Amino acid sequence: MALLLLQLALEKRSHAIAVGFAIVASGVALGRNQVALLLCALLLFAAVAELMSSQQAVRYLRERLGVLTTMAVAGGALLIVPMLLTLQFAHLSNRPAELLDDALRGSLYPANLATLAVPNIFGTHSSYWGPGAAASAEVDLTDDSGNYLFFGAVPTCLLLWLGVAGGRAWQPGRRLMTCTLAISCLFMLGRYTLFYGLAFQFVPGIDLFRRPTDASFVFGIALAILTGHCLADYVREGVPQLRPLGTLAAVSASLAVVSSAIAFSARTGHALDATRGAVIAGTIMLIAGAFLFAMRRHPARAAAAALVTLAAVAELLWWNTASRLNAEPWDSYAVLETPTGAEAAAIALLENAIAAEHRRGANPRVEVLGLGGPWQNLAMVRGWEATNGYNPLRIGLYDHLVSPGEQNWDVSQRQFPLSFNNYDCSLAKALGLTYLVLGSPLERLSGLSTLPPSELLLSGPPVWIYRIPGAMPRVHMLGEFGAEATRLDRRPRGEASPDQAPAEAQAASRLSTPLLSTESSPGIAKIVSAAPGRVEIATTSASRGLLMLHDLYYPGWMAEIDGKATPILRADVLFRALEVPAGTHHITFRFVPFSLGNLRAALNAVLGRPSGGS
Image (tube, rainbow, N blue to C red; front, side, top):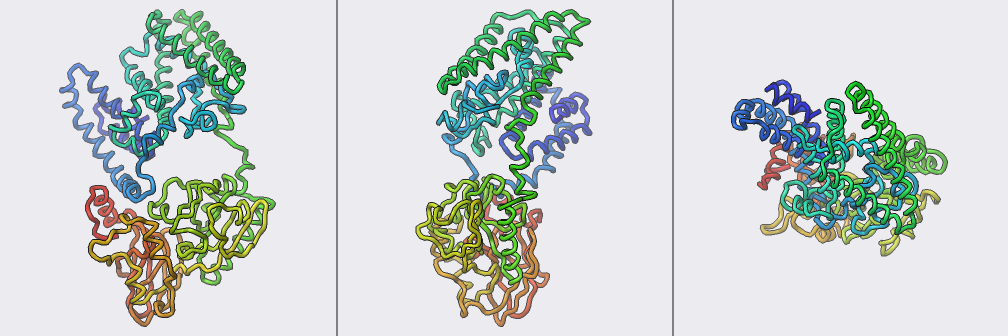
């Protein structure tokens, strides 16, 4: 849609269509992943191609400068705020960049190109034996779904015969998609070509992502458009005369890719299975080609093209509808909606315990670890406050200090650094971690030097639930001495900031002893209401002190004391705090990422300038 609107806006010099393009293209860009980046590059190249293909490039550009300006202004207005906030998070996240060696592990193994026409050449729809983590260490970040490119034997036949052998892929109006197809192929092959390494080093943004195979989305788009052009040309012009070099390239490339796939399959004893799949796909291609050739006379070409299109659709539906690659049984995720049996009993027990904590004025956090994939998101679905989950990107300091791991179903990803060396450490208590929900007994959890004090609430299988005593209140008051020892906004000159100092050592030293004591608790603080993005607290104190809120410090939060804006301080590396005067007060924390103050801070962070505050 964006590509069509771009071409129409430039052709008709329409400002209205230019705005439409800006809206659609902004939606693409806001995907904020590598696919979005590559699609934006395609749109840029398409605009350049339109300019370069005109007979008078300077005049063409001058006549459409207003339309291009409309696109830039409208698109920029839509993108600037979400992109600023994205860059703000990336600056503070645990993974703002990737290493080339890691990214290359997400390359597409060349033999996987055979799946374009032969869907089951690696047993993808049964028991996968193709390239991936189990069979190829150099591409261990790929799997059967990422390596599956099935486009159809019929469309592949059209592209190889009409487009490559017949030369129509390089006709005017087709060259942009042909170049896109070639470049995206080189990109997704990753380590097997020089192109990706050069792009990673010299093209801005590529080093922010892993998996060259993401280019398969762009590859598929180019393939679909180019094949559509080939079929439309067949209807209009008939069968092209074969070109010797094009024919040689099409035949040799096809044989090389399929032969390498069969050879790879032979490593695991599946050469016969792979050959059988290749023969079936080859037969379909020959039948489709013979049919189109037989119907090459003008009156019959449109009907032949329609029938071939229906065959291509049927092929895609047969192999891809409700495949295990894109659909799973509802029962696999029942725990997220209607849990039953032991899982339902475990969830009910935990939620009753959490409700009892809430009635006592506590705000417990939960850690779910070592249970099935659906349990990764169960805390979010059920409204539990969790220390982990399925979360590849996290606030960098939190990730370093707590080390919860990217996927909580995989116990091996849960690390216990110096700052969080056990579930009863000071940081765990400050976070309010109270319940462990495990897929095995606590004593089997590797990485713990000693078992923490705990109360077994439920013994599995399949679920074990433990209560860890000693969690600190979510909110409390500190007196003068405790406040000065805790806050980070008054560091001596030359002392490293929280983002510069080694996070684990800093947290270990600051949180090595509990901060609650009778001397440092001059008043009472109580959460009146709490919801995502908003916390209201009532305080009463005889003297000025520091209100500690054990929620993460992050830009975009603002605080008010009795309706008056008050600066938020960073305390104990991770948390938020406020200076509160003596007396009784109503305090509100609100998350307002779109406020002018936060957008200014985000811009300063992007430009590398010091921020004026939270």
